[in-house]
Image (cartoon, rainbow, N blue to C red; front, side, top):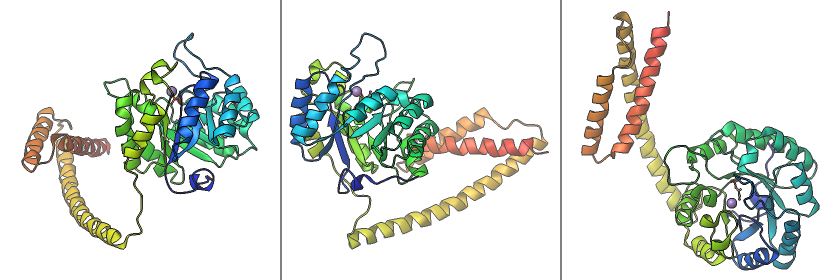
Amino acid sequence: MKIQPLNTWITQDNNPLIIAGPCGAESEEQILQTAKQLSEIESIKLFRAGIWKPRTRPNAFEGVGEEGLEWLTQVQKQYNLKTAVEVANAQHTELALKHGVDVLWIGARTTGNPFSVQEIADVVKGTNIPVFIKNPIHADVQLWLGAIERLSNAGITKIAAIHRGFHYAGKTKYRNKPMWELAIELKTILPELPIICDPSHISGNRELIPHVAQKALDLGMNGLMIESHINPSVALSDAQQQLTPSALKELLNALVYRQSVTQNPDCNDKLSQFRKMINEVDDELINVLKKRMNIIEQIGEYKKEHDLTIFQLERWQEILRTRIQWAEKLGIPRAHTEKICQLLHEESIRIQTELMNKK
Ligand code: PEP
Ligand code: MN
């Protein structure tokens, strides 16, 4: 897949791409005032605003429509900021192109619908306008990847993914559970794809945003998209999660920006030493795992011969309890041991099941 790095067309350096702007465009005044203040923050390179808002129920604020695109033209002219809007169908896309919007993004609800994504891809074909693709609402990396492929197949090369968290039915402090591992999985499949984190829609409230934004930078994400409104308390959508431009400035200043590589030879030496130590420990670990696996195979054969069940509840409970105790004595937290024991046990069951099914 041909993907142009962000620094060839928008950031000019290797700093993360910072995107900010209101959830929705509400009035010309709100847009221009917000853009003015955001344009004074040097690291912000792209101004976002929703013109068509996907809402859970009708009669909520559904965006101002085409009129808002004129305001974004003013933002480009008066404040020299590039602009981005969400498009959900062919008509939105045609209008955004007609009004000279710089970047399009596909929202989480749309990414999950291949018909809509294809409709958008058909309209942008031949333009090479930048398109950012948010993750789908549900935790499905293939669906996310599929949407990216549709844009790429239409000849778009300025592509980035936006990680905005996933719907989660269980208990969580987030509006959308980050499930960082899914963003990492996507990056592993497409290493050249920039991934931008959207801490606003992950958090759902202002308090969590700094923690999520920092975590994204710590993981080496390529940018942040953060909602900012001139007066969040009266925002017509996502009021809880928007920051004033000055609060955003403070947040951006407080974040620790990290490099994925360093030119400092001492630093690189030290890293090599640590990595050598890890390699040695992993070598030991793999030998121990091999020993464990041999025993699992013997137990499996034995259970098979004697018509015993693979899963033995009491033994499993005992393993979990004792390993947690042993590990805690060495200062290893319970959650860590629990996770690893669960993985080991799952694998043990899988290996024994394979054995039993063998003729
Ligand atoms: C938005 O960016 O305002 C938005 C609607 O986001 P999402 O598609 O991630 O829900
Ligand atoms: Mn929003």
